[in-house]
Length: 166
Image (cartoon, rainbow, N blue to C red; front, side):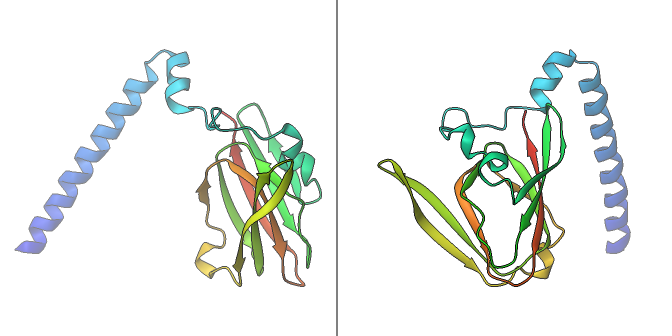
């Protein structure tokens, strides 16, 4: 008897969820497109707190490890290549993003901060091995201040980063 109640509840819940979602999508479709863009694509840059020079952007500061796969006015997709036994130059990522590793290697993440006129390593996080469950799985990331990654392996590491400009 309890299983039948569960099944009926799931069916009714599914129908209500589908109907609600359909109503919300059709309501948004009739909204003013300019308003809809603001609602769907809010600024992903925390402009009040972002004070890093454009020269620190990953493509400018670390061009050997960051390659554009695709870019338009809304999104930039980067291929991030971590060469064997190398440390990429310090750089930043200005926008929120989704990042995932397709081939992870043992690495150390270095976080930098400014002291006077110099960048200094504020923290380092050794990552001996990424768990298999995080490979090919995207993680949402906020804009990222000065950092660098050292590949501690004799194999190349590979990741992708989808940055949301709007």
